[in-house]
Amino acid sequence: MKRARPRLTYANVVSTLCLFLVLGGGALAAGVTAAPAGATITIGSDLTEAASTQPIACATFAPTCTSMLARTKQGNLDPAASPADGTVVGFGIKSGAAETVTFRLLHLNAAIAAKLLLVGGTGTGPTVSLPAAGVFEFPASLPIRAGDSVGFDSPGSTAYGACQSGAESWRFSPPLVDAGMAEPPQSSDECELLVNAVIEPSANVRFGKGTVTRTGKAKLVVRLPGPGTLTLSGSEIRTVTRSIASEGSSTVQVHLRGNARGRLARSGHVRVRVSETFAPTGGVAAAESKTINFKGGTP
Image (cartoon, rainbow, N blue to C red; front, top):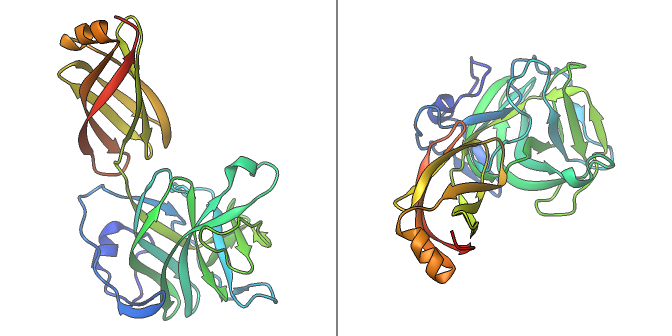
């Protein structure tokens, strides 16, 4: 189904009634469950560039290759890689002709990125048929982690926009394997790969160790799925709110109060019920309560 609007939105994903092929077997596209407004983020191309009329082919020795969007063009406000863990609920592709592609998630090994580009496959979505030139949108349900980028597998594709616009795309022949060995790109260019994804950011927070200083300041290590706002509260701690800039571990300082300080003085540790609320940027807030064992000096 050809779409008139070039920009992938969650509302369009929900209303899309396309026929697509699921990897490993054919099936009708299922509707994506509606989510609250403002509950998604988009990564990848903004799909505003004109698609190529001539396909960019894979290497001659590989009938199929993996194409990855490494950097978006200048002026595109959407990031090329996901800023957060979450779930891909839809994706869009703009092509210049009829073709068949398999949606992919890829991850650059940042630890050695400065010396050697090595990329691994982290997820494989549905195989979809694009019946003609145009913008096409498809529902999906695919876990994504912070730092993942979008791409697809195909024998060659016209889903490339203007070159020398600040964008960069990489190709891997043969295709990358999920959880397989990371590989360097066999070829690259300064053209934007015209693919993007709609993501529901995760609000799942994982608690680590709790420690206490002699002044009663509790330090709690938490692992955040991405940027957003974290609030910790409870009857025995002061409420604290922190703005989180990126995915990863963070140490949050809280103050014990009430009977918790006395119990800590007597035994050297104290179990406190902590309630956390995390509102991911572009996503839906979630709340959870957990008992944390704080160990440390006497306040």
